[in-house]
Length: 347
Image 1: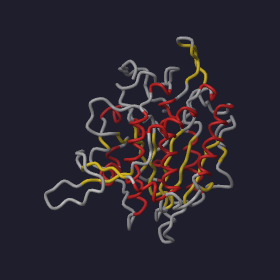
Image 2: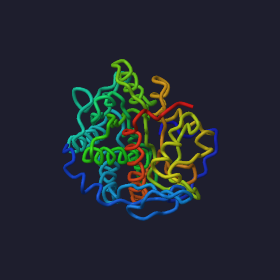
Image 3: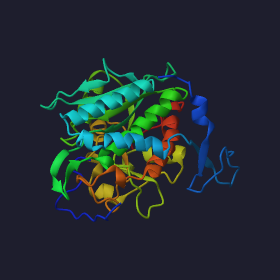
Image 4: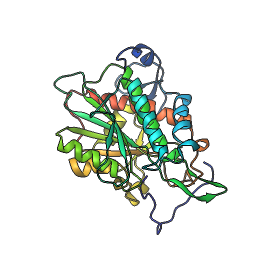
């Protein structure tokens, strides 16, 4: 996350913490459910009668081992912290490209790589698209993104000088990659889905700014942007799974909870206090295109002590928690992408 912490503000750390429909039947065969309001439901639960609690079904698609395998690569020492312009981020980009291609996600432009023109270093976003299945709605696009760069080599701390960036932001990248895998295999939504991995976030949100400007210039209509940032560990003492930056700026939180269960998204006061809405890759899309664009996160300023430090390692991540976020977000994306009319609105 770019400049998450103002050095003049207190930070309270705690220690430690391509084949359409080919496998759709396998993907959707096993589902879990959560009661709207957070109470657990049964697999395949029927819609509630009047006065009863409804349940929201979500697929048991992503597993801890699935996200773990992604994390073990993206946050490995071999990638040396994925700093923009380095061999490490080149390796990460090649990995993301290969994954998108294997999922049936097409390049949005001439290739998956879209080179940035707003930075001296060689830097590129990795961007793919799943075209919508409904000719009347495919021109409306949801963008799902995360930054895949980090800060690279840093001063030694306890003999370690690699800032691996597991939570920041291999975790968000893993979420986007797993959503791409799901929708690449499932029945194609009515609206198009763009999956974007941004570079140079740590240099000033440059990758997302480049893409937002390019999409606007080329007339590619984005109806909403869902960004994932630092989702690797659970929050502490919260009755919701993730928080949304810019919570009150649109109805995205409301729709997320409608489709994903009322305990999915909550309001974190610190997100407003530290103005996190403007400090991640959602912001360029809001500013340039005036659309609902928000970041989903679980970094709550108390649950992770290793922001921009060598200690931000895979060993600190909770893969079960990460898999749950992926699975709970599937009905959210599915609902937004298949609604009869565009539901996302600015407040």
